Image 1: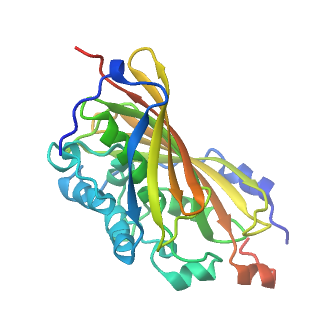
Image 2 (image 1 turned 45 degrees about the horizontal axis):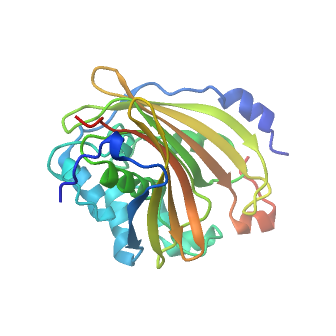
Image 3 (image 1 turned 135 degrees about the vertical axis):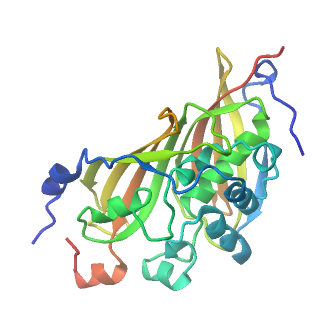
Length: 165
Length: 140
């Protein structure tokens, strides 16, 4: 049966998850590891307790262990698509408030749009746009993030003409 | 080292940001997984990445945006506030490459706002173009 993108759009566009709080407060140690991977020696982050702006969604997340739905990928994986390989293509962040060590962050995620357009990787590629709203312990919005995700099949699946949905 | 606070008054349109380079060595790929806690195998498992049609493992979104953020926060100093960042990942940055992260002031706007272009480039050119806006303090 052909992939019914209209039915998927109808079911999933506008779907929103409830607010889920990050597993831990904003902490020095993950900030140190973030800085280590980038050779970043900025004392604002390593000593003063400022959270690097791009880490707000990290601290608003349950993280990969123990198993839990975290960030947008489990949500995206529930949307029926011909393939199950994901690539994050574009991202947009807007920040409204600073975040510091000790703050508590949470996030809710929304499926903004689903459409199908072929790519070099897969003629049946599906494009999914999501929006994540991140709040602090006072429920003030500290940041909004948008992602454009591409979902595709493997070359073997394409060669075999197989689809997941 | 603690960077001096940058004031909006001192910024010039067209000014280049001091950039930096990183070699995407095997160790850097390990640091990437540690730093981002992103364990999707396309970023650390060569067989998985190749089975999906990629040439090799490549750095993830959180690493990419970390680089873009660093070039901005290095430049703006303690008084600046990053307001927005938009980027496109046009080509993967594969293990073994050396990437350079660069930036340039595009426009100064009232109320301390500065618009910038930032980007990541590899051996074959720009892989991640981006735009950003920051707020800087006025000179006292």
